[in-house]
Image 1 (cartoon, rainbow, N blue to C red):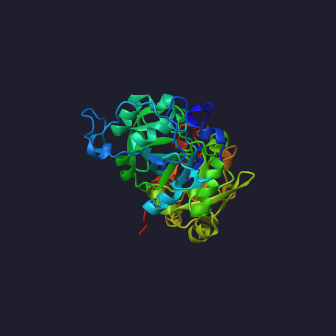
Image 2: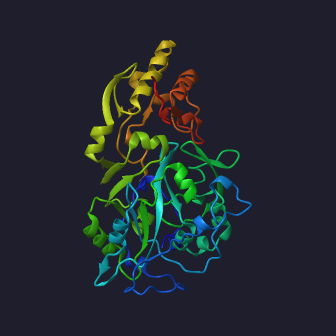
Image 3: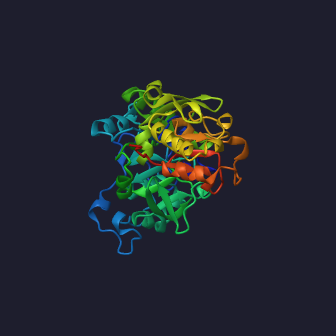
Length: 414
């Protein structure tokens, strides 16, 4: 199970994705937990308590608070498979996924639904899940499931973030994390729980963030091999209908590289990306869905740089920013021969994380004098112009990247 594995940093390359291969040992019910009769129907662990019970009076964020969960009863399930759709799963789809059988017995012992997607920060993608607290809790391992304060804080409208991501997801001075244009207070830095999930919020926050409601299913396969169950699900619903991730492989590699992947982004990022589908092809490279490339990536001529290949949704404000640079007589501050590109579909070097370059939403300027970890030599008036036109600058990050500009919000030049 995810919580029993070695402590590690989970990368966000899994993006709104999901996988499904697996070690059969991970499908075994946890010691001390009730064994599931494989002839019984799969049991959903989700409840409706959050919708019917009042939130705690001392909730940190009353607007986003839900009822806190009760005392943990000790029931645990392994996190074996994560199935992700780009849209809300219908009752028929859920039944097809959770109703598969292996040798005549139920292949899914327990499951919970969640709302799942990605957000971007400092040129990296992170996976966020909005969950039913009672339903999700048993999948997170003994240490996490029994830590009541953590669940009370999520219920109170705060976010739980993996403790291994403190540097990659730094909160502001007041303890808030910015997801799209929303500020969520970090209530706890959690131990590794469900692989493929970097941050957890409650259902109210999921709705405000625009996550597709209940578009994912977290599955425990009981005594059945997750690898076999995954194959049964793919046969029932289609190989490329959903992203199905084997969470054992995610724990070991950071991403199930042998599977089709989805990215389901939130906020302005979603407006420019839509649903991004890709397959890892080795050597740090990915193969995006050709249909996505045709509908999102264009080559056009812009001031100063000449021809560039970028996301079409970013192109108007990139042109506007560069036109303003020229209008102010600052064109000499951007070196065309030191431009390092915009769209290149691959993982960040040495990782299984996607950067915004994979979506054509970032560009690197004046590379030699603006290396990572330095103040850089980028003209600050040029920086201000790009910020005005909706770009974030890597020079503002905790670990600086002053050559880097990326889409932060959609701005209409008209």
